[in-house]
Image (tube, rainbow, N blue to C red; front, side, top):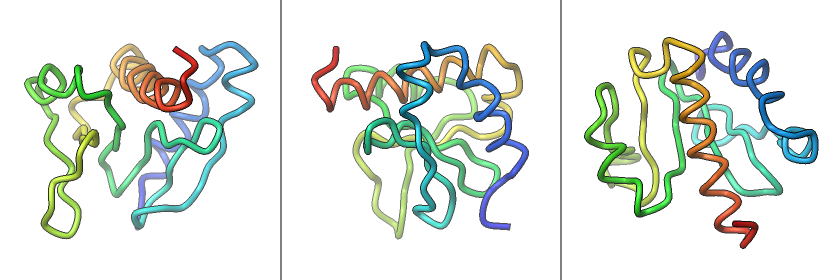
Length: 115
């Protein structure tokens, strides 16, 4: 199992919380051995095994890393900037998942100068 289909389905089901112009612009792409959700080509969140991978703007990294079930994303032994992993306990509720989706989308929109 490269990624949790259950978590990927939860993300797909949660996308309609965003306006159609945003949710319709989300695409899926296999990356990092898992599945990533991209907004206009910029990664927002992804699923690797049972972890939720989230792109986070630098100003939100410290607060995010101080949240339960969150750790830096270390890929091939190196910590990646602006990436975190959220373990299953950190996205159990729909409200928790929505928070991480909003954070990831905010990062993508920032990179696209839409904010």
